[in-house]
Length: 243
Image 1: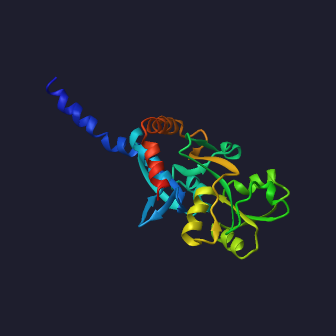
Image 2: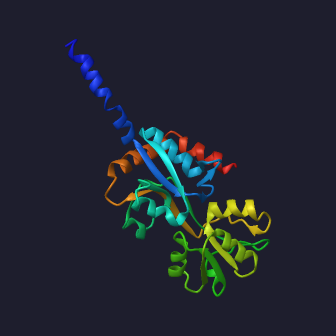
Image 3: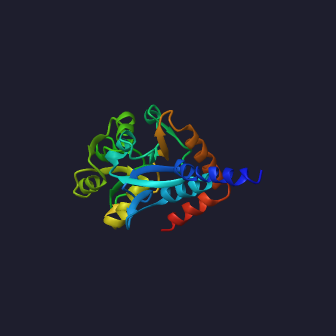
């Protein structure tokens, strides 16, 4: 037994690099999606990044972030650059192609108007008026289906949405609540009314190609539940809310 034990330990040690590699998950995210995920000083940073890091640590996973333009996110799964993408909104259309973790954070669509105008009560209040929104994300499809009376203009990105709004080419911009507020306060301070309510609520989660990573989803779901139960999630959320 004394002779076999060292050999057995050496054999087990030889598997250590493989185990560590198996626990590494490459996660692609939009390189400019504050406050959820963005690149700062060459590193991925944001509310969703911090929450995912906390859950991954609890699950014994190592996350390697792959920041890319939003248009390339799905391509990272197709060309092998990433194993998962986040933070991405859960909706019925995406469920056909992706499996999702439990929500990391709740966000949604909000209406931004030129200051000092008040935030419209709803999309219906903008009937006959022009509303701009980026082509990426679920808001264009939602508005098109639920508010056909709105003159919807779909554009390239948040920068173009704000530019058209401030130039008077649009009456309102439909944007992600937190992202829109962050960009408006940073880039257009005092020029845009910051909304306080959502017209559409959306959960953001990590997504993988459908049917391919059930074990990863299960591990992260358990870990997300754990960090919510012990207050870690709440502390991260409060820290970002105070920034």
